[in-house]
Image 1 (cartoon, rainbow, N blue to C red):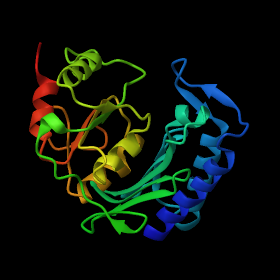
Image 2 (image 1 turned 30 degrees about the horizontal axis):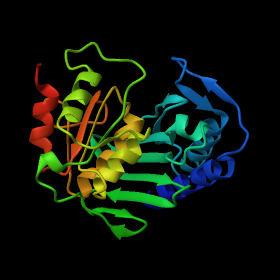
Image 3 (image 1 turned 90 degrees about the horizontal axis):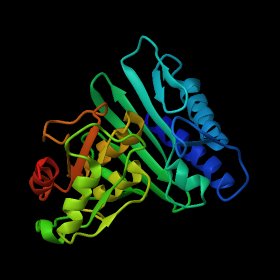
Length: 256
């Protein structure tokens, strides 16, 4: 299964790299800037083809085709291009993200940005790697010196904790905050210590499944905004190096 995961990720990555900065059709999903390209669909077709060739009875959840359910305890969770808006604009921060879940447990996860030649991978209980070398979350303990990353949803949640209010709290602390446009890459960059923390609202399972496992296996902590144990179908994602987790939770939950 690991070999199939890595093969599907690599083959989809070749498609993305081939068309990057090229000519392709771009459409809108719900919301004027919620883009999908024909390359998303080509990447997804290739991934599903590789998986089906080896495991025809496994279930699949993928961003463009939705649920392809089978009577199996194995489920592949796929984002054929995470960061489609970046890809459509020639911004090289986008990736393939694939995870494999068995019952309630994530077993494998891979996130591949072919333009930067970065393959992040994790296997449950065996750690996380970047291009085959072990990675770990940062050791920073001083929240005031943290470097954070976030994203903004196409649909704003109806919540007192509005994303802009929470963003403003961190900005007013004087913290450097980045917005890259790919949740899967954000999570992986927490896992390898480039960022100390990440939060975002309204993500889907395909955005976070692989990155979630990679953060965990790199020694990080992932919860919802109440600090409860996380699952990939949550709509709130907070991932940190663990040391600054409580401080980020406090800021997110605070009522001004």
